[in-house]
Image (cartoon, rainbow, N blue to C red):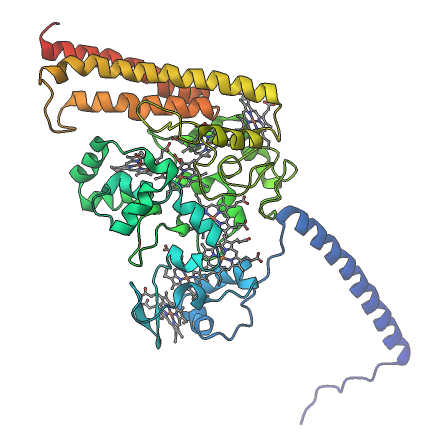
Length: 424
Ligand code: HEC
Ligand code: HEC
Ligand code: HEC
Ligand code: HEC
Ligand code: HEC
Ligand code: HEC
Ligand code: HEC
Ligand code: HEC
């Protein structure tokens, strides 16, 4: 027998009190939710909703168990909300280059830019025009292995014309595959051709599977590659007033703002993306990271780019959202002059070793004696670093990691040359 007391029937007055209390609670909760909703939208831009929570898609149903992380991340993406599906990026025909058989169909392990291109034509076209495309790959692999179509594509890139220095390919060859897989290639494969003939890897910046705007707009994304003694753009940014503003106040910025509509209200100071890619002021969103650059700063001796005047106008239109015209003109004049000054010192390093070249006193092998390294580092590390510091406001990198080291290398070169010539 059930000896628990039967629930006593509620008296009508208690029902009334309960109903009133419930109404008040519901109304109150409503107000709280609206408030949270508002401030949540202001801070985070978009509400986080898992669009795949109730999905019965085949891939999703099984991958919820096979790879829960991937389904979870894609569920929160803007693309899942727009009903883009796993198959849109992954599924291909049986005879597609790189296809692997999987659960009764064929998939790509790493979707290529050809998959993205069907929906994001403009982004892929811009990317292909940039040095993040084929030039990044040719920088280590050389152009010899490219198919005729790829070679034609490479040669058509306006900003790609700068030919890579042979010495650096030599370093790639010297170090060998075991190492370069984890070194050159892990950064430069951002421009690697895939088996289907398309170029590049969007997920080097857009970490899958959330493809979040906040993540890709933050400077840490560029930090994967734009760091170190030869291109310390991230370190320079950190010590610039722009980077300081980011590190001290960035948590309040509007990271998920709609692309193409960004203003200083969303971003009171620029990140790498704002200056180089984002639509900001009169500059439109672009995946061609060379589109706003005046100089080939990475080169031993910097020269102006073919379309430098248009590029400069685009970059300056970003600056002018926050700085006035005189400020920007003064800055560009001073930075142009400083760039030419660094060029002079690099020419000096060439002049110092010229007598050895003339007399055949340098071995033909690259990087086989100390003087090769000193001569290389003078421009590749210190000359470049100084130039990047000048243009992106990193005084310490212009001075102590830049010009000072360059001057020290010039002194060392003079001594090494004198030793070889027997004039010391
Ligand atoms: C019945 C379960 C199931 C279904 C349905 C399924 N998958 Fe998978 N999938 C898996 C498992 C399990 C793995 C991991 C295999 C492993 O680790 O070897 C996997 C691996 C993958 C991989 C990596 C393949 C590789 O060789 O590295 C991709 C990409 C993938 N699935 C995509 C999809 C897509 C797209 C769909 C829908 C067309 C799908 N899967 C349907 C269970 C499934
Ligand atoms: C917008 C395009 C896109 C969509 C949609 C997409 N993926 Fe992917 N997926 C990628 C890319 C790009 C990679 C390769 C990332 C890399 O370079 O490592 C990848 C890699 C994978 C891998 C192999 C990598 C690993 O770590 O195991 C699996 C498995 C996978 N995706 C499953 C899925 C499933 C399941 C869905 C749907 C819930 C999905 N993907 C939707 C673009 C997509
Ligand atoms: C089937 C079409 C389709 C494919 C394939 C596709 N996308 Fe998308 N993608 C979309 C749509 C639609 C949106 C816009 C969603 C919106 O604005 O609501 C979008 C938005 C995006 C966004 C912006 C996300 C945001 O939060 O605003 C990124 C980044 C992106 N896609 C990257 C990729 C990459 C990388 C690939 C290839 C690996 C890819 N997409 C493949 C349709 C696609
Ligand atoms: C940590 C990431 C990273 C690694 C590792 C790396 N690079 Fe680079 N490399 C870059 C970046 C970023 C630039 C662009 C610098 C700039 O434009 O200011 C660059 C520029 C270059 C350039 C000049 C641009 C050109 O196309 O001529 C060459 C050549 C080059 N790298 C070759 C190599 C080789 C060869 C290796 C390996 C021995 C290597 N890199 C390792 C990130 C890397
Ligand atoms: C160098 C890093 C980088 C790479 C590589 C990259 N993106 Fe982006 N992408 C960004 C940034 C940064 C934004 C945000 C721009 C902004 O602030 O509005 C973005 C935004 C987007 C958007 C949203 C644009 C819009 O106007 O709505 C799409 C779509 C997209 N990327 C697709 C791609 C595709 C496809 C590839 C590969 C071909 C790719 N991206 C490679 C950095 C990158
Ligand atoms: C996976 C590595 C990688 C990531 C991540 C990356 N880059 Fe690059 N970037 C490179 C390499 C490699 C080059 C040099 C390519 C060459 O010239 O050979 C380069 C070149 C550039 C250039 C010079 C282009 C030119 O025309 O000379 C700019 C500007 C740039 N990147 C900006 C960015 C920004 C901004 C981000 C982050 C949103 C970013 N990159 C993320 C690898 C990367
Ligand atoms: C205030 C805007 C601004 C910010 C922020 C910024 N840059 Fe730059 N960047 C510039 C300017 C200006 C130049 C020099 C352009 C020229 O040649 O005229 C430059 C040059 C470069 C170059 C050299 C390209 C070459 O010719 O070798 C790379 C690479 C680069 N920036 C990457 C980055 C990365 C990565 C970040 C963030 C860590 C970043 N930038 C932050 C404005 C900016
Ligand atoms: C979104 C707004 C914004 C944009 C865009 C912007 N800046 Fe700035 N910039 C700032 C802020 C904020 C400061 C800090 C001002 C201070 O020192 O009080 C600053 C400071 C500077 C300084 C002073 C550095 C110092 O050491 O005192 C220089 C130089 C500079 N910016 C150059 C540029 C250039 C060049 C561009 C375009 C390539 C640019 N900025 C784009 C907001 C911006």
